[in-house]
Amino acid sequence: MNATWNDDNDLQRARLEQLLAELKPEHYGASLGGGWTVGSALAHLAFWDRRGQLIFEHWLAGETPPVGLPAWYEDLPNDVLLEQWTALPGAEAGRLALAAAAAIDAVIAALPAEVTDAVVARDEVWRMRRAGHRGEHVDQIREALGL
Image (tube, rainbow, N blue to C red; front, side):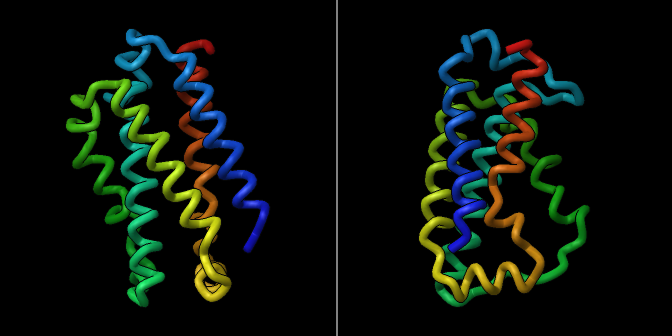
């Protein structure tokens, strides 16, 4: 187990929780540019954390993900789902984001060494470092709203 990524994940999940406590209903529709809103960014976080959780659950069952998918393929969900994420009520997107963050953080914290070692060997530590993605969007939302 690597305490650093677990601690970082916990810290950024706490920052997300604090942000959600500060948001008012009118904040969720605020633009982040490029067709994105605060609410859609939160739904985006929920999706990617749930996706990561499911990948680890498959990995634990012996089904490892393929290596080396092209970047355009990895980015498809953002393009495909933005419209649905924007349509989701903002407060619900926030609830889903926090629940997904807690779920994947718990899975990552409990990963056995053989899985974490395999992830590191594949140079895919980002799969366990959810903090970077989460913190990026928390910062983006705070900046956009002046919080």
